[in-house]
Amino acid sequence: MLSLMPSVQASDKLSANEVLELMQQGKIKPLLTLISQHNFEGTLLDAELEREHGQLIYELEYLNDKGEVWEYELDAATGEILEQERED
Picture 1 (tube, rainbow, N blue to C red):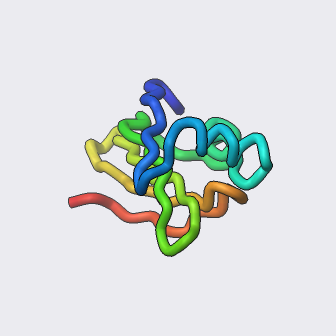
Picture 2 (cartoon, rainbow, N blue to C red):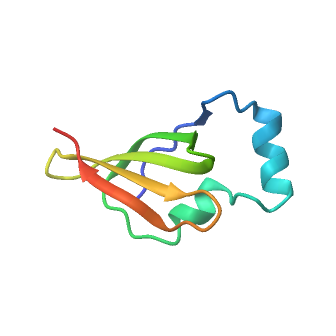
């Protein structure tokens, strides 16, 4: 269940205008669209859009009911989960 919605931060020199343009061109999907494709548990703590090795990736951090923080990396174009790990 999503109970907090932080703003998406763009890193690796992506301006807000560039992010908007990428969405308008269909190169990336809006974060809420991609989150709705998955059943993430807990509260969304942080969301960032990053460019890694030429690929645009949403990095999400969730806090679950057990007090664990999980990090997910999603392909910003498809929503595919590329990586997930529990933070220590």
